[in-house]
Image (cartoon, rainbow, N blue to C red; front, side):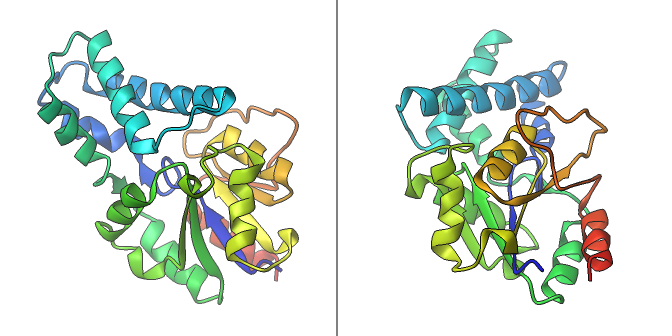
Length: 224
């Protein structure tokens, strides 16, 4: 039986595509494309810095990725514009089923935690701006170890916070690379496949695949 459910944040709990709403005032025609490139570059920069062992905080990674995305689409921007758009990352929309699902999970006496590449200020502001802050028991940032997921050191943070067996932890993410990393570390994993994609296997498969967290709650009920 699981005692702790650990969630990824970006794309799993919060919709990174909602940032396009902030980009529309800069380029309404290409807002979604810029948002997609921003996210893709954000992930690429974090992975590259992990390989090079040149860590910087995720807020800096995110701003650098934004500058690149805007430059690609030839959108003029100032430092004020970058800060204003970055603020949108602190106010992302959460997926609609999250509040209800978290209440149901808490009613099962489960610990609910976050493990994210985001630094502490980003995560706490994002969670505090949402309707789910009261249901989160722990916010864990890789900034504590300065190793981006999917580094094993990042997942080891969970065992620092919770003195439980790895088999008592379920890691939940919408990102296949994250699921691979957590499974490689020894966690059971749930892949939240919101967009009917194909799982990119790289040495591991998810324990369970769901389309949303409502399905995850139902799966946990069946395991009783």
